[in-house]
Image: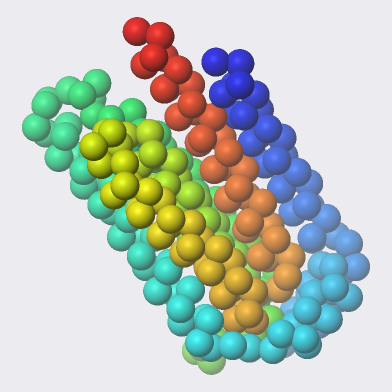
Length: 225
């Protein structure tokens, strides 16, 4: 139990660092280097990254697909939870992993909505002339892909039965590959500043560590029964 609780604490510390970095991203080395003269923090680093990477639309569209896949996974777990709730007519009969996933999905979407309203900076490129400037910090695709794929791997590993271990390992490996290529793809797409990618990764990792710790607590309680 102590190890799982320590994991949760590490996650909260990392999320606190994300909040500190968010403040710095809006106040350190701010300069109007974005489209239409929009201001960006850590402008020297971000400007150099933009000029080096450029724009890679293949990677942009690939990570868009990953984003939709992540949303489908969220919907699938939500549907499974609703199905079990209706079938057994008791929330206690629903896998705790699914309930935890639902709670954390709400948190991830809440962070996305918050930064759509309280904008730290805009994208380094305008993807749609009619849409104009779009919020870019933190990278919502990085948050979504990394957390959803990572939490799916953790949840499947926790829920799976021994006779389906090989099947579960294949799912976990697939989630890991999508998560890693999603990070690389978003970096190479050039539609975010480097600090957007970094912040999205830190936020997602923090939530994933907390989620893993909570699942660890659940499993330790199961074993204690």
